[in-house]
Amino acid sequence: MTDYISNILDNRKLRLSFIATIVVAIIAYTFKFTNAAYGWDNVAISLNKVYPSFGGAKWLGWSTPLLTMLQSIPWLDGVIGTLLMSVTVYILILTFDVETLAGIIATAAICQVSPTIIMVNTYGYSLAFYLALLFSVLGAYLLVSSNKLSIKQIMLAIICIAVSAGYYGAFLTTTFTVLFLKILMDIFYGKTFKEVSRTCTAFIGIPVIAVAIFYLILRILLAVSGQQLQAYGGENNISSLGSIISFLSFKRIADVYGACLYYYIYRSFTPHLLTVIIFILFAVAIIVLLKRKVLVIRDSAKNVALAVVIILLMPVAMGFLGLFTTQIHELMYFGYSMPYLTVVVVCELLYKTYRSDDSNVKFIKSLEIVISCLLVAYIYFGIVLANTVAIRASSYMQSTYALCIRVVDRIECTEGFTGEEQVCVIYCPSEGDSYIDSTGLTSIPILDDLWNVSDSRVNGLNDFNVPLFIRNIMGVPVDVKQYTSLDSFYEDCDLSDLEESQISDMEMFPNNSCVRKVGNRIVVMLNRGIEELEQ
Image (cartoon, rainbow, N blue to C red; front, side, top):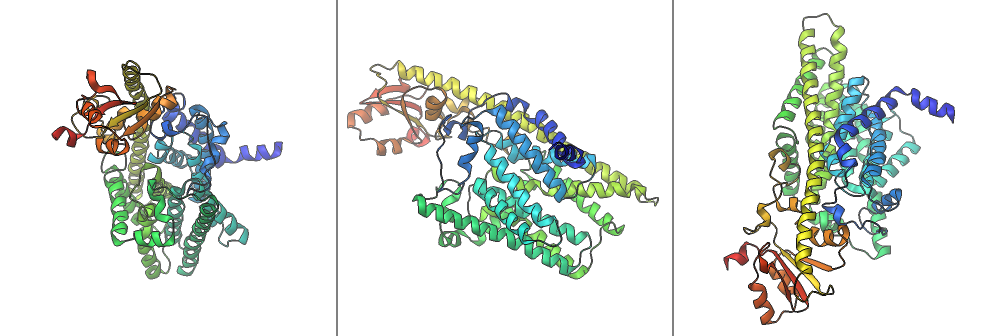
């Protein structure tokens, strides 16, 4: 055992991967790990109850809270998550053949400050995402680790990819993106068209088989449990082959390409055009390395054609979830961070050419330095963003907590309150000129791309946060239900004419008549909505 541990510690890449990943985590996420901030889905998660959900698309996700004894503990989640990310970074370093100390640090930092990981750390029970990511890159590595795949490697890769999908299917895009990038690297590293074609068949075919097995398991679990896939996230679009086919369209394919362009040109979570400049210089570096024969394309006509096809299909690999759902968000974006690792590899290749004495060495050195500096800027902005999101999440919780205290105080002071009534909160998000919409946190443009900080959710006022915050976080023993429109409230409740009249006379929060007992209900009028105000 001692020798085994000693061998691990002697592994330079493994050692540096862990050190770099942990250091970046400390810089980017210390505030988050040491400050519990319950918001968004985290509020919806009961703090001490987890039930198996074998029938959903995330049929393994329920198991991760068991690692922390069913508790959402930011510090422990952060420690375990960082260790899992360290292993992920090490696998990616092996996959992309990153060699230098600077390259290893850059790889760790790019992964750690990915918008996906920033958002992962705003959720409760984040370990499911880390495990999904780990298995997704492990599945890809098993396929690229040798030129001749064994049956054992293929089976293990299929299991890893299927398990990744079972935890969180969005990370399948990472598997496909890494494999597509490795195909391109094989082409530029001088492999023949026959070799690349064989690799291409394996890299696409085996993950597709893994996805098919995942889907088969899902269908079996749905049949056994009697559950149905939820509409959220478009899961119900994969409930059957018929629904998958019916949802696919040329518009969905066009949207996938549009989302890719939008991400890199506008929504890359850095100052606009920084990513564009990085990849333009990256293309220049590729041309320079080809001219110097550091990179070589054999069977040029066939391999160039194949490279063009792979590049054209890359947006589909990075964002194919958009083919099945319109509800794409930051947790599904990790695949978009993978091309930056090829930039790191190219910088290493430029660095290795410094020994040359020809007249172009100064240009090559300058190109490498400029690209490296731009990558440092990209990483720095990611660190700033990670800290800012964590601080604003804390402010978000405090804002929500302050609002809910005021609302609960109004409820408990309502004449006739017994605690047995149903509390009906009426709030129409982003509608009307209510007092709530004009309070809270100010907008920061660069953050508007990551999460809609300028909308009403900064006050905890989305479809579920007020009632669940009151129950789950504050522990107030009242039955709270929230309605996003007066119409839905009227449809759900059998009200008399007198009761409807009493509600129509109510003012919006924080006016005196914003909380009123109506029949056997207590109604809280946070925001009527613009349509109601115009009537």
